[in-house]
Length: 120
Image (cartoon, rainbow, N blue to C red):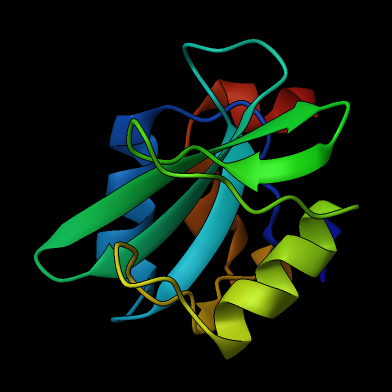
């Protein structure tokens, strides 16, 4: 599932457009962070918004960035993190329920994301 929902280098605006057009409440995808090199963004739609959660890697594993003072939960892989959060979502997050998989989208929909998508 991981590769099917990973959109690579995609802007926040393109993500929002894609999810508003092709997603539903609970739809989610992964993209590269625009501001932190090597980090990912978990984007979850909950109308009228697309909520974005940064996922970073450290020596302890992968974790969703938490509010100051909260202890992050670490996972060995991003797939494991997603499996866990789909089963039991932390209170401060929107639940990632429905993967917005690339293969379910038309070529036209993927082209609207922009040229950076095709660089993957």
